[in-house]
View 1 (cartoon, helix red, strand yellow):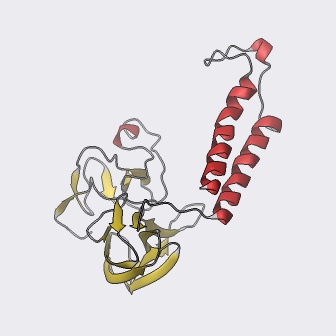
View 2 (view 1 turned 45 degrees about the vertical axis):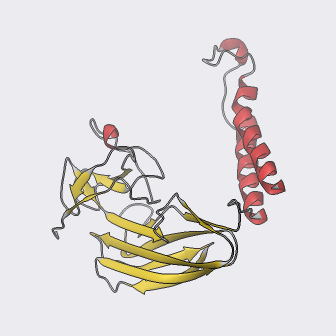
Length: 243
């Protein structure tokens, strides 16, 4: 396994597959959080469990080295005009931003891509290597989001057979005002998911009679309590659609 210098992973952002460990001592090492870097618990890939690094406190470990039963699977970094994932670049109007993206991985890599609003705008082929970089100036015409994603050559050796993959959280680019974006098709799709989940709770999920059960929330109508988050989500989607 290659040896790398220790790096501070506290500011890294990724969105990948997350699975909490189920053995004693596993859970305190991480939890599901989109502001953390995927890491692994247990033995070397592919048997290790993938988890999230907590974003709060800095943690330094050697890339590709065992440390407290943790193996770092991949490190993807992104900056847009110096702004990291989760931040917002503010432009006075249409303009150009400078993007730098890089990936280092213990797995062979196929490619690294820069994505603007779902469209690939730059790509670097890794050719089976363990690292790749992209630097690109990208034109921005309106409010946008920019992220980068890395594809591995191999597939996970599990029942899903997914390709090795990592995706950063976005950097937001505000163009001439406060950042906001609305995708009507996306809102309709999410609304369908929310409504479907609510219908499952209403008609399929097994519940004990309220007359026979005392719930921790102390409300008489348990179904109304269960449905409340779905109603809140639908209202939020309606507000987003009007915005």
